[in-house]
Length: 114
Image (cartoon, rainbow, N blue to C red; front, side):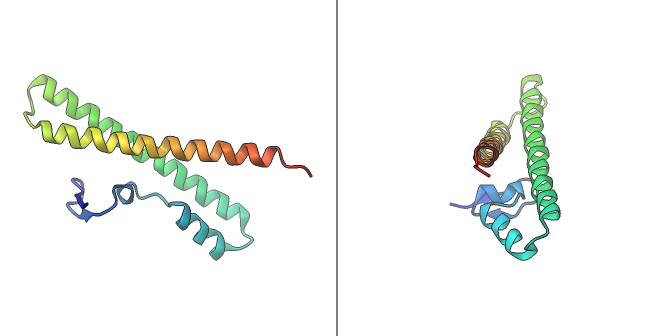
């Protein structure tokens, strides 16, 4: 199934691609390219996580703005509201999944025997 990104007008087959954050494969590729540059690698991954949070906040804000427009009668398009709500929901689910993965990885590292 393909989707049209309302921000850019591009057709996107995977809605996660719209978030512009590296997936697990992209992070693995980054690790392979950078090798032992752990500080830069951590900074890149942390920067990507912050970018993901900022994108999620933007989508949530856009959804709230669409709700307010519809409630005040400035917009009659329920389609735009539904798209904004779905974007916000998908972005939030993705962000929560990443957070849970980071927490699980942290717990695994903490519990390692030295």
